[in-house]
Length: 131
Image (cartoon, rainbow, N blue to C red; front, side):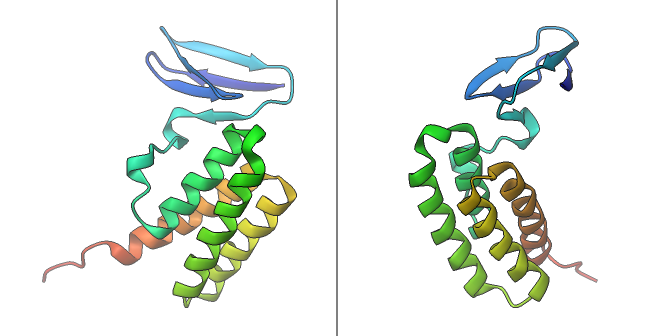
């Protein structure tokens, strides 16, 4: 059983349905379900960098399992593009892990790898200190 605590107004996606808490609430998910907290949801317009586009493709595969084949193709294409652009061995390994998890249908694990890639990309693109 998975317990999820939500604050007032916080959103969660469960099997593609968007739910919003009214008041503080704890949900107990008793069956296998695709659960994504609101803070982990990315809107299409936020997918504006290579790592973010990969994250978005993995997220869509996770919350739309009925379209998994289409999303797997997008994941492989986005991960391949990002892999080619990265020099850091650990981040290149993360791209390969995303492809592996996506191919196996473990989109939640692919999302975890994507979070690392998005963070790394953000650090690379962050403006330097002007000193």
